[in-house]
Length: 232
Image 1 (cartoon, rainbow, N blue to C red):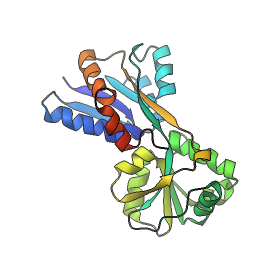
Image 2: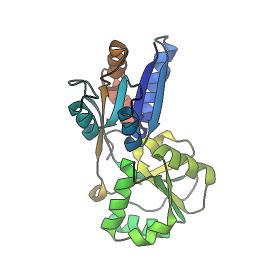
Image 3: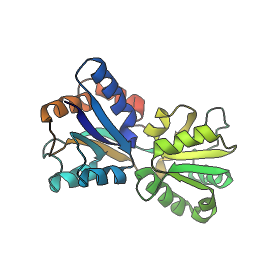
Image 4: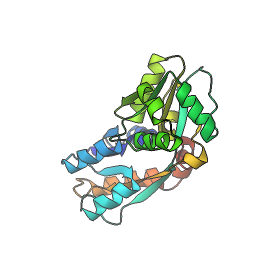
């Protein structure tokens, strides 16, 4: 029986690695979708099949309260912060302080990011620019995409000289063709905890729990750390 996974893009790397291992070992097929948390939450609410759901901890708690996720099944993957990226081989701008980051963004030829309307990292970026007082200066440079993975992939493909990207570190590290410059300065970080839960209408709750255990139990801590969870 195929397991169905609805996942935030920020968790794509660890989820896909677990799926690949699961299928290699002959446990059955898994169908997964990844994307901005707002869009993924809407999928679930619209009735999409979901055995395991991975979203922000806040969203998982809300979905437990509304009966869409089984109570008592929440398990945290960990916290993720945003980072700055550039195409592989491009000069790394100084982004270590608020002042340096503001200068780097104002001098960038283009800024690639996930859609602020539906993506955690995109919304955080907008708030950060407002906090730094550079929102108006940066606005014309913004190139938004449905999720961070799509934004970083496009930046890698287009290789615009002087371009930078901003999304969750876990998405930056998953995309070939981009380099992680640095996490956002600590004073600007807004760590987001991502969690999983078992769908209330799961057709295979036993299989869902077994797969979920692979994501957060046993030796998962090392894989999560390597992917960028807990980095600050």
